[in-house]
Amino acid sequence: MNAEQDQLTPDSLSPKSSQRSTLIKFVQRFLAIISVCFVIFSLIKDRTILEQAKNIPRRDVGLTLALLTIYFILHAQRFVLLIEQHCRCRIPLLDWIRMLLVMRFMNNVVPQTGSIYRGITLKRDYGISYTDFIAANIFFIWTDTILNFFIALLFFILGTSQLEIFRTSAVNILILGIITLIAAPFTAKALIKRISSPSKFLNKLGQIVDELFRGIKQPRYIAITTSIALVSFLLMTEIFQILLAAIGAEIDLATLGVFYALYRLTFHINITPGNLGIREIAYGLLCAGAQIGMAKGLLISAELRILSVIMLIMVAVAVASRELKEAWKGARSRIR
Image (cartoon, rainbow, N blue to C red; front, top):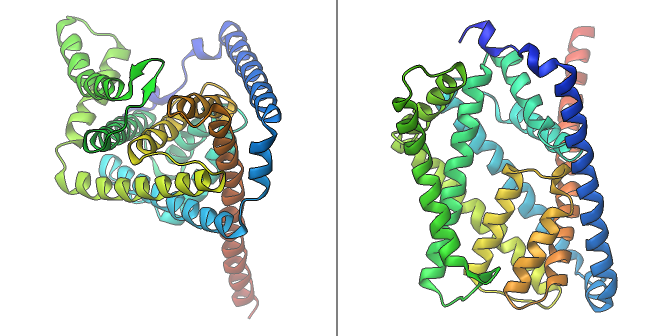
């Protein structure tokens, strides 16, 4: 990858591009404000739900924070393996955790800025080109979404859940999603081959598609990351069950699978900063479809968001404390 390919184009720095970016940010923040107001208004209307939320046992809060921490570390490990496999670069887990912390906080302010920061950091500190990083990230999103949809579908097949989303069977939505995702790279590759003189963009797209096909031909990597993904799935479904039980609600495992698939999608696709309000409404609609009430879905998502921020702060403090301790030891050794 040469330097010219990894530089921003003049068009991306033009006044017109800047105006478009400003408009997009305005729309995103406006949607966030409207969504948050809707969530707050809906929860205020249901006083019973708020009373239940106040009485969540401290033990459940502590257990949820512990499970979220384990989940976060496993998620970081998946990315370490991803970069090692696709970019031939070994990044220490602690460095990646630090990067993920910054990325998560940035995405909660302005969508996608955290991903941009991560791409710049990987190029600056590890020499990973933007194209290689984008290809690896798309492979992660692609395989992660297919796997989550498939696990949820498997639970629906084995169980008796009749969950509907907008009057459409969740099973049909999951099947359609899996087929579409699997077919996407094959369709893209076929279209690229049919174009006699592909543009620079299509050449890069072709590289990304080739990387997808190369990635699925690594059985050891697929087996390890799938195992980590399954453990992550079990951790998050347990977290959902804890939060649901605390407010007197219960849903089947298949619906919990959809909860987790939706949770992961809200990290891959950002509409508002951190999908603030959007994720809560999505969970509200999902809980309404599961016949336990929209308000409970709104509350669970809000609780999960708050606990996730607390977890990130705890991890950030732990990482910073460790680095300060090492810096102090280094300073003392130099003085001696």
